[in-house]
Image 1 (spheres, rainbow, N blue to C red):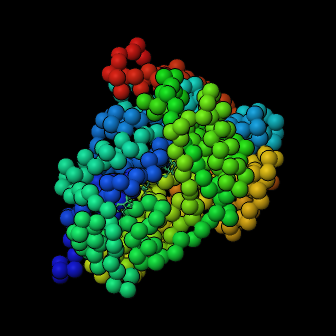
Image 2: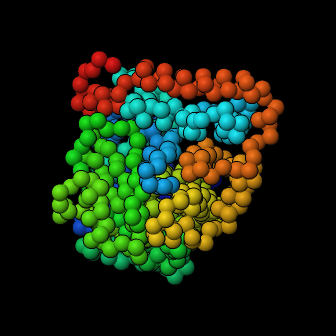
Image 3: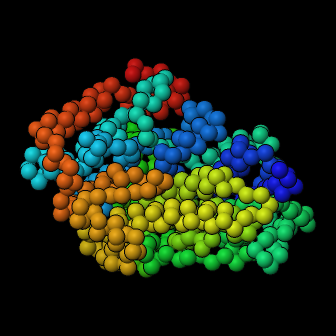
Length: 500
Ligand code: FAD
């Protein structure tokens, strides 16, 4: 094989979460010379604290020890999301990770639960069958102190800055070159290919493949190559965020807390050294001042903090995630509000897709097409899933009315039609969220289908009811067998011995 066309040099522009995830991952998997340049004065977005279970594989693939990773990132565990005041005020529902009870005779438990409800034989809410929810609500961990995880499907809450620092150390120790400079000019050849980038100190660097990790501005993919951004702000109407830091809570729960607000929603994410707290809101419905006031009141602060961080959010996605010899990652490739913690996941997905479609220097069009189609699918599924949360809400405030009266994408309309009529949730093998995630949101927001899967009637329902009880009992028993999350965290981060 002719090796003169091989990609030998990769230049990553940007040193936020996307840049350093890319550097560590590609250094592990490709025998290329990798350099990362980051600006000494353009700050990273610095948020991105909640994650999805897929990150476990990323950590393992890099060969990192999970406990060390947790310590370096001030991380806590996450078993799901608790939504408060979302569907209605004073109402709470959960999106737990993992299966909710699993399948019975090949059919998701959701359908048996629905039959039980229709027959008035089941008073439970659907996620009562989730082990993750049961543990999270009881403040219990998914692993024993000193032991490995006994419950799969969990994720992390982490400090985004600490994650980037840790991955920087991992990547540079494996040979990634780290450059500190401002990219002042990106020179393209007029045919979708970047020729070189010029730094503010006069240096010019060229590469065979460029990764644009420059955040919302998309310095390479948009400003140099002119790839358009598909704006989704008419579908997801929140466009701002304000973020504050609260003191650590030693009684931290292993879940992300989301609370519906006047014109958006507030997250609370426990880390070991602080609680991250932010308000995602619509500037059409709330001024920046009002948002900070509402957030401060929510957090129980006597006065508004002076160091709150304000962020403009650009909701949408790139028309082409990969164009010519440039692949965009992270915020340069798109953004969907962080309700379901998908930002870091989408970086990971892009890196996996890039590895599957790794090019030679010709950056073949079919490979670009494949990559772009897979990323478009992931973004669109994420958008639909987040939008579904709003669409099902019954809150009456003007923001909530407007948020659900948007024009739904056809893909979501079709999904809703299928579910409403049959209870079916069909997801592709590479879906971002499994069917159970959709069931949790539908059931949590009391959207129930006309009927359940007819295969349910082929199974003896008396036996099913016994099994359902056993699942709930087994979940309750797990509470007694697993340690408190706060104790696990003390042991993990402070090396403190505890009785259980
Ligand atoms: P950035 O962090 O913006 O980094 C850009 C980099 O480019 C910086 O290093 C900067 O110095 C560099 N740069 C810029 N210009 C130049 C230049 N001219 N020359 C050299 N370097 C340059 N994701 C989650 O998974 N979970 C969450 O809970 C979550 N919460 C979020 C909350 C909010 C409010 C927002 C806005 C996002 C959230 N995200 C979340 C998304 C997450 O923050 C991002 O996906 C992640 O941080 C990736 O950012 P980035 O690296 O693409 O960009």
